[in-house]
Length: 318
Ligand code: NAD
Ligand code: UDP
Image (tube, rainbow, N blue to C red):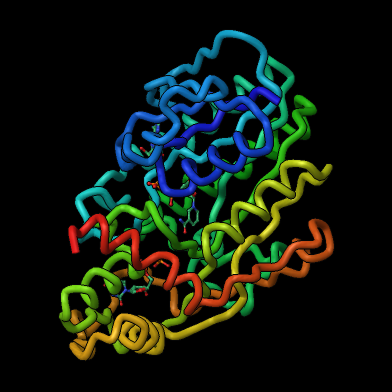
């Protein structure tokens, strides 16, 4: 297939590019580098199956030649206001990537009668009142909170994707991605995985926001990419959760990172209260993915962290 992948220079986009090329497809990567990194694609220089278009997806997208699939991954993705590149600091760009970017990407799919896959997020469930989260749960989202620019843009993106499916008969997919980690995450991302790993490698205490009782469920990137690839190939249009259902509190997660890195810096409470609408808990119900895709994550947290830490060591010059 000839595939357009928006957000190709990002963490997930670059891993997905590698997988698609390994499967023998042609990939046209598109990115404006707002949160992405050219280095994530540097190893593809000279690969004749890969080409790149520097473009902001909020503007009309033109791709010469037929396209078989459009994968829309372009969006800032970090919730942390302490990171200059987190979506609270790029509020308009985040809304534009989710809204206008999705519209333009769907437009390309329609123009070429291509299939379409939207990278959505567990954030659409907000601070969930149902636990674990099934795809049938409608969510609990503050429409004007600090995360709203992301949550609402992605909810709009899902609605628009379904509208194109129902009205224009576009062959669409929606993946709701839960917290994913691995090599090529941005160091200044502000997300908990890069923060904790770097603090631990520097021998510092890990910064816990709030009392650390909030939970997340961390999925290693290779598992996620496998699930996305399988979803691309099935005929299914409702949203599908992909993530690792192994739930852990942030406090426990800090202990795991300290143990693996042999950091004796311990932890400190960085802010007594968590930021705004930071969800209390998050865990995917992956029954749908299991049944539909015969997929389940296989990389345990400790093993995924062992695979991720060398990347951070290298980037930190250690
Ligand atoms: P990332 O920031 O590493 O990648 C996003 C990429 O999109 C970057 O390369 C960025 O430059 C590009 N981009 C942003 N706005 C753009 C625009 N207007 N035009 C062109 N390119 C643009 O983040 P990521 O973690 O790889 O996330 C990729 C996608 O997956 C996002 O849509 C995100 O919402 C979704 N997602 C990620 C996670 C996760 O845990 N990593 C969880 C849920 C959803
Ligand atoms: N967090 C933390 N310390 C940090 C960074 C994040 O305790 O240095 C917490 C944050 O408050 C949240 C959880 O870790 O409850 C996951 O945050 P992240 O930014 O990785 O993503 P989110 O799942 O909130 O989108």
